Each structure stands twice: as structure tokens, then as C-alpha cells.
Length: 100
Image (cartoon, rainbow, N blue to C red; front, side, top):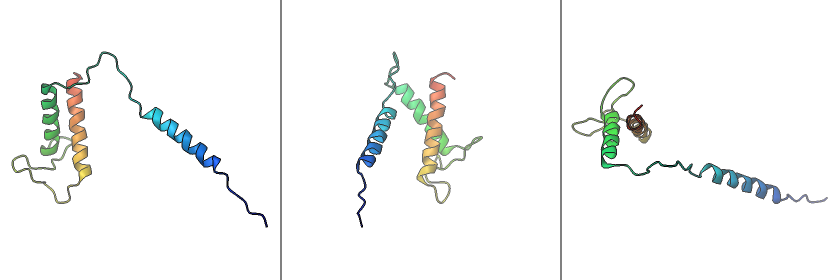
């Protein structure tokens, strides 16, 4: 009986092509004439919008923290709920900063 050896070159080829694709995807896109720094006013607006999404009930949003006490409103509040509210607040701030 002959032993069949697996070629290790096939695995190396797949890994290198995957690494090449990852490096292409992760490179930032340069935008000319765009400032990457936020002013203090912009930061305050972003914080205000995130806080609004975390502590206020409005159409399409359920508060997950109490505004006065800072405690969670519901038992079982998890990180994904907080992150969803933060992202929503960032989107609100972005639309306001861009004037949309």
C-alpha cells in the first residue's frame, strides 16, 4: 500500500490570497480636503445625540437607561443594546453635522 501525502502548497496559496484580500479591504480611503479632527462643539453634539438615544423614549427608540439615576430601565440590558443606541446616536449626529 502506498501512503498518499497531502500537498501543503494548496493551503499556503489559499492563506496568501486571503491575506492579500484582507489587506486590500482594510486600507482607508483618502478623502482630499477633509479634516479628520472634531471640534469641541462637534464632540458635544455627538455626546448629546448618543445620550439622547440611551435615555429618551421617542419614535423608533426605547430608552435603556434612566436619565436621572443612570440605572438600567430593564433587567437584562446587554452590550449589544447599548452599542445599537450608540450607533443610532452617532448616525443622528453625523446627519446633523453633514447638514442632511
